[in-house]
Length: 170
Length: 148
Image (cartoon, rainbow over all chains, first blue to last red; front, side, top):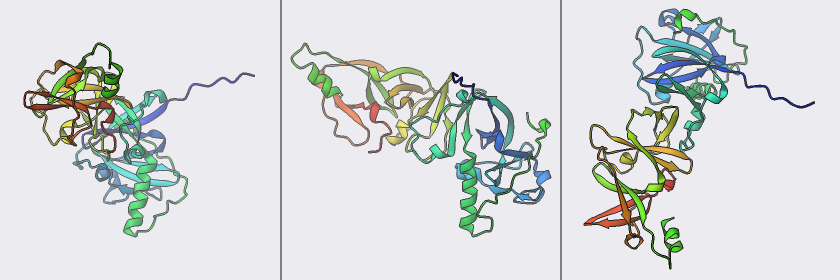
């Protein structure tokens, strides 16, 4: 029996704008997209009993993010039982791509950023950098541990998938 | 590499080097023409947060994405002109883009005998040559961005 390699299945990415830069998040890890009103006054959104600790991604990436506009959203995501939320300037939409369409970060980038990004996507006339969700959540864990807060160890809880309202996604 | 070429041509009819002379912040620099893959209008770069010195953005040219080496910043200069140019060079890790002054680069033929060692430490060089009172370094593209 000869082995036939099946074509790689397409991947879906949520494209967001953060401080004027396009970022792509693996849609598999996205648990929901909320408005500020839906989150209420909570710093760390609590959805279905799960706390999605707020991650200051703009600070981590050295991006200035003017939050609080009408288009701003809070993206909830989860991976390997760890949960986090990030505030973004705008959600651009979902993009389905063949894995070969995700370009590697050029080798000239030699620093820790190689762990921050999983690649690049040509988007509109620009480029979206694919964020490494694991790194983003690791940042959250490190931040919590550094602050001495509880929850430093990600809880191994199966995340309940929250359906995204398509009307909110362009 | 230039020295190797020089040795190769020892005893033979001396062959000249083709250089591209360009400007960054008004400073004249040269690069071997064979290391250049194109010159374009500069497009707005897309910043990439990271910690690699002087490689902090990418630029898109059609379906191609190039990392940008900020040569001007590495030399503590500012690119001059309202319509800067993009110098696309062949780096061993893949092509790279550099923003250069809007002044149109010039092709220059250099006699191997005019090649000298560049003693400056401000940029990686494969040598230099003298033009009037100016010493013009020949940029070593392969060593751009390498840890010194």
